[in-house]
Length: 305
Image 1 (cartoon, rainbow, N blue to C red):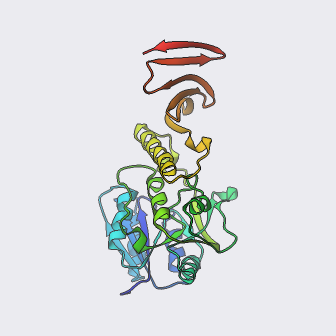
Image 2 (cartoon, helix red, strand yellow):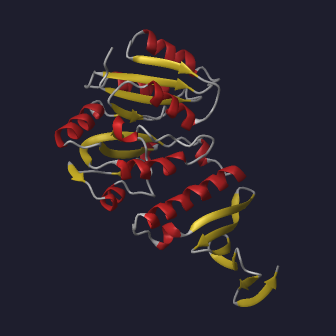
Image 3 (cartoon, rainbow, N blue to C red):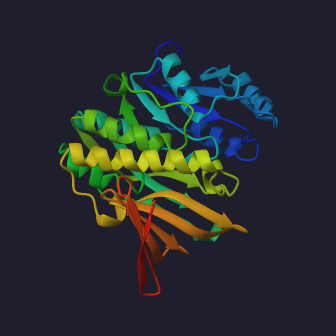
């Protein structure tokens, strides 16, 4: 197709088990004027063969390969290749309702919006649950309203949305980090003059127990999580947006023993507190302090450092 209206970008890395569900849901879309850009991020599990089989029977599928570089690099690559006026991101282990693209597109065009968003259903067997659920088509233009309706920072979903390419043309996903969605979505919402929620339209988010972000975090993942949460705190502060104490309380480090959280270091307004088993405060300090305040079972004393 020479002039697709919508570009669907799918990063793929070792997703053989679920990939067909994703691609079938996109091929069956009621909105046909699309291109499906698949970036194979160095898969080694046979995902490539599945993609090539689908591509052989559908000229809307554009296939690209790269050395394993992460989901951010894959999305950035897909965006650079895209030719549609509108962009959709879909993860390779998820799927969408048959009229997903049509409803997002029609609502966006009808109201002259830059982003359209739909319900996100967390699919996990019998434990399916809506993370975002919209019951009406409604337009929002105020940044605080857009942030609230998208439930940022709790649900920083890049997927489940359609973007006018023009408004995100200067945005790229930060490469080489975890939690890239948290760093990207608030900027996109800020750049969008108008956003619309769309009812009766579902993005199915599969809970994959093997997902990288669901495993016990290593040092890098913990640091990236801390950086992402600090970014959220700063973004809300700079834009005069309210942020609850719970969301402002940022985890800096977690120490595990036999897979259990033993100690957790949390930061709130430059005050750091170590918690035993995540809820018993035992040590409090500031980075600039010359001493630590130790508190355990009501016993307090000061430790110089």
